[in-house]
Length: 365
Image 1 (cartoon, one colour):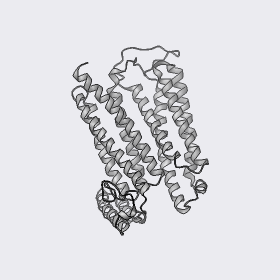
Image 2 (image 1 turned 90 degrees about the vertical axis):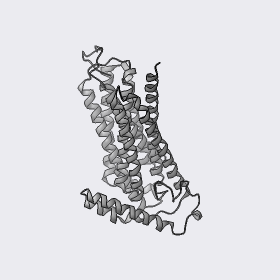
Image 3 (image 1 turned 90 degrees about the horizontal axis):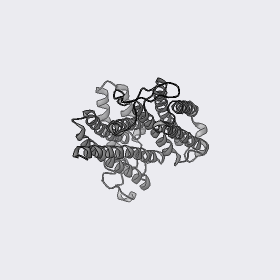
Image 4 (image 1 turned 30 degrees about the horizontal axis):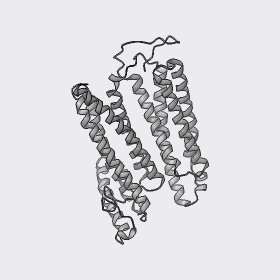
């Protein structure tokens, strides 16, 4: 194996590890969200002004709540000025005048260290993304797109870190949390694409035309899943509002949710139906060729498990363990859909052979 081949192999392994690590960060972020630990550290990037957070409240100054609330307010004022200059005066006004932003939570060592671990995991993954870009330099002459997109992933992770600081400074402003999550999906897509592109040459599977129904169904599944994820964030915001009015009464939270919850719950049946149709078409056209039926089945099982965790939350008073798992499964489903789209269509121009099928169509996988 040549030196160049060794470098390509290193990149493929490193980029795959980095992609999997992103899902770990999503899980940890879900745990932070479900345990209410998002404001465990009231500042960023440090935690209570230190790189190693305190373990007891007596290690903090008496006026720490007012101090950090004021620091966030000053940071938000600067942010509002930038947003206003970009032409969004109403949004800037909301950020500067939202009373919830100034509410400082009491110190809780468990929540503080939960958020701190989340930041440590994020820092490690940031280093992995940077290392992935460094390894992608081997592709700069033979496939510059991989190097460029790896660099874009570095920029996206840096921007994600800044968004994380804004999430803290705005005291978990709901729409900022949603942006934070959607940007994670963008990073997943970037890394998934470079992984698939870098492994194209080592994938020894015949590549032929993809039936339009498969592509259309996959894209529809991707869009529906994204919409379901966004609806889920709206449900989560509603849960937070209900929890504030009914603290400690988890058994009453579901009954007091608004119409968004019921749309989210019923909409999941449409998502499942589309995926079952996809599994049927993939099995009918591909059979066992290329393990595509198996991957489609994994995707359907992921959707099914996501619905199951949703049912657990709906009927068992939203247990904390189910929330991060529910989010992670949704993210995995989205990633699998995007991967399948790329896997079926990547480098279609490099057709080397065709496989006749039962229904006389030709497909690519």
